[in-house]
Amino acid sequence: MAYRGFSGIASYDTMETIRNTNEWLGATARAFASYPAFALTPNPMLRVLGAWGEVTERSFSRMVIKPDWEIPPISGEAGQDHIVYVEKELRRPFGDLVHFRVARRDPKPRKVLLVAPMSGHYATLLRSTVTSLLPDCDVYVTDWHNARDIPVSEGKFDIEDYTLYLVDFMRHLGPDTNVIAVCQPAPLSLAAVAMLAAEEPAAQPRTLTLIGGPVDPDAAATEVTDFGNRLTMGQLEHLAIQSVGFKYRGAGRMVYPGLAQLSSFIAMNVETHTKAFVDKIFADARGEGSEGDRHNRFYDEYLAVMDMTAEFYLSTVERIFKNLEIAQNRFTVQGKPVDISSIRDVAIMTVEGADDDISAPGQCVAALDMCSGVPAEKKTQHLEPGAGHYGIFAGKSWRLNIRPLVLDFIDENSSLQPEVGRKRRRAKTEETPSSDCGISDPLADSRKIAI
Image 1: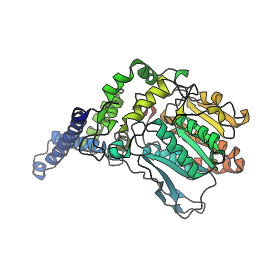
Image 2 (image 1 turned 90 degrees about the vertical axis):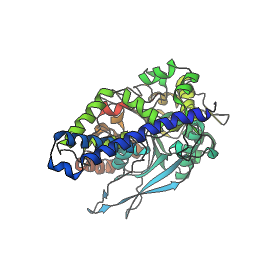
Image 3 (image 1 turned 180 degrees about the vertical axis):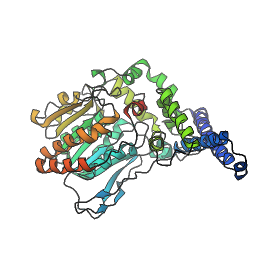
């Protein structure tokens, strides 16, 4: 990969300068419109200017801030609230294994590892998924770091390194772990389990659930797969890759910048986003907006983007989408072949959304045929009618339909009593309020990434 030196850094810093300038303009407009003397001559345009400034400042400042997990307390059987602590179980240069410890509660028998995608947004995108699982599970999450904050001295991080991280995390958690991979990491999670099955069978997880992931991108064409096939790797590197600027610890590292990713996200659904921001500005001007309204809850997460290492992004496009190394069982890690058919003792479940236009139905379920060593009774699949990409892991479809199926699947492949688990989950689902945070599928699905 060519080093672009000062020209790449200049491009990166130009984007950061534009972001910083807009944040400053928003803050200036907000401060100007709130000047006390203007209260003597009230003018509705001053209210609009102040609201524009507040929305603009908040939006552009969020682009460089990692959101908090903000997991609410979990209700106990005796009616007590149990605070959830976010603790780092393992620390690694490019990502940590995070544990959500529920205070004053014994660990639940269902140990779940949520493998978060590295596709432009932080692992906090799975906040509602974590919240929905915590009453019934002991939950761990892969918390990937922003590449701009990782010094060049830490070396590279591509899909092979990602897979080795997953192997390390699964080995640490032990054989009673139930892995749930969401979207992008589905094929690499499959490869990580295959590596453990071949090299260290005693450490492989009990179950593997793949949700909306591109195991076989050619199984069903989408805009994402079409984009990957239209461009050569040279064109993609030229268009997407830049050097981190001098402002951050990772200065000089080649990355696919988060701000560039955000621009493509918004461009895919620009009319919807424009309307959302115009409505928010006028709502604030009328005094109808609030700190915790639907707009802020959604965009505080949506606008928070992270840089991906260039080698991870490019190797994902080339090896997963173009060369189909996982789909054709030709994937290698450090020169060693990874044979998916070596998985024999791990139960496999796939979940797809009928209306998913990022990872279309057929791409994820292909994993079941690839796992030829797994008995048929340990395989299951679910196609959720009417669900888009976001809905199958964090929306209403997940909460009401998919989550109970996944927990039953875990129970059926463990020593737990499925009927007891069903009763507990049914009661919990009935008393748990909606946690969609105002994120609807049409808007959330505009998170399509160019891989």
